[in-house]
Length: 122
Image 1 (cartoon, helix red, strand yellow):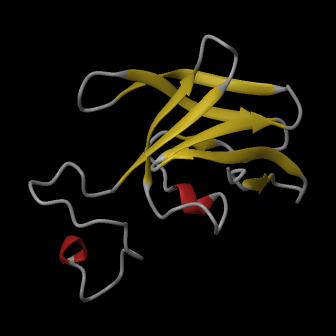
Image 2: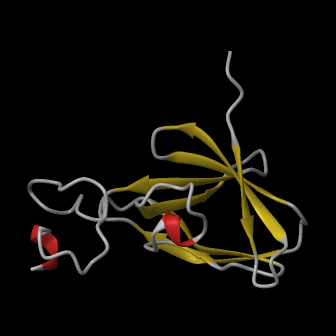
Image 3: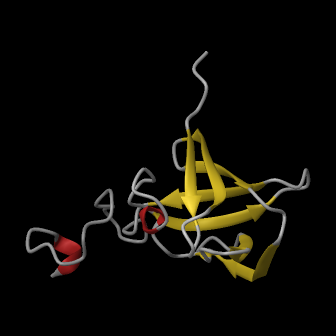
């Protein structure tokens, strides 16, 4: 069985602060390098499911509901964070979706937002 690759997310000062490990398509387990972290209120998705609105490890980066995962590391998919979840076992998970999932016909991965070929940028 192949061990999932870990993605080291670095904070504001270039130090490794969070590790993301792919659990399944669109789901990553987040492990804090240092247990110092702020968690923010609750964000509700379009289906009414609540989750954290942000996770802010000591030294950053602030990982926020609604932002693109690729902003935090080039190896993460260019998908929107739809849910940040603090589990009962103390773990954290990040759930991703296309930025266009609210459309009738999802367009797939997010574009650069300035692509003249992209229907969502027009």
